[in-house]
Image (cartoon, rainbow, N blue to C red; front, side, top):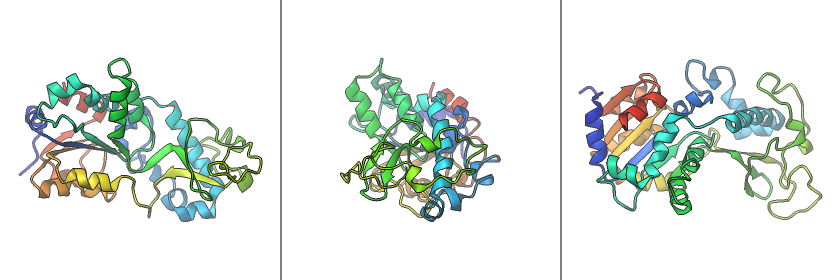
Length: 297
C-alpha cells in the first residue's frame, strides 16, 4: 500500500500517539545554510569522508581535519534556526502539546534524535525563553540527543576531558581559515587546539593537560551517542517522524523498521524521495521548513 499524503490523517495519528520520536537529518538545517552531506551538492561530493570523518584521517592529518572542522564550525556559529527547527522546538510548550498531542504521556515529551552537529535544534529551544521556564527548557533539552556529537564540543585525546565552548577560533593558528583555503596550511600539532587552550602553561590537570583536542563529533566507525536511550524509547514509540534525512546511515536508518515491526506508524517529511519511503505510512515531499509547520498548524 502506498503511503498517505493526507495531512489530516497524519494529524489524527499524531494526536492519538502516546509516545513520539522525531529523527532529523541534514535536510532539517539546509534552509539555515548548513550544507547537506549526501544531497546533489552534498559535502561528500567534494570532500573525502575517509579523510575528514574517520579517526584514521585525523591521525594522518590533524592539521587538515581541524581546518575542515573550523570552517564548518564557523558556519554553524553564523547560522540561525529555521521554521522547521522552531516547529519541533514548539513541542516543548505545554499548550502546543495539549493541542497537537492530547494523548501524549504527560511525563514523556517527544524524544528528538538529531544527526546534525550544528546545535541549531538546541538554540531553537533557547529561543522559547519567553514561553517556558528555565526548568521546562532544561527538560526539553534533555530530550534532545545529538547522535553525531556537536561542533561545539571537543575531546582531549590525552585526558579524555570533554569541553563545550562557542569560542572561536579554538587556536590562533586557525584564524582566517575558510572553505576556500582550508588545507593550504600545514599547522604544527602544538599550534592546533589543545586541552587547556592556547595559553596552556604546562599543567597536567584533567581538562587542562595540554593534550591534542579532536572535534567531539562521531566519525565513521564510531558508535553514535545515546543509542541505549534511543533503543529503549523505540520499544514504546507509537509514531516516528523522520525529517530531512535520506535514511542511508545506520543505525538511524533502521529506526523506521523497528517502529513498524511493533505496529507503530512512520511519517516522513523530506525534500525528495528516498530509500526509506517504503516504511512510511505518511509521506510529505517538499522543503521541511515549509512542509513541517503546515502539517502542525
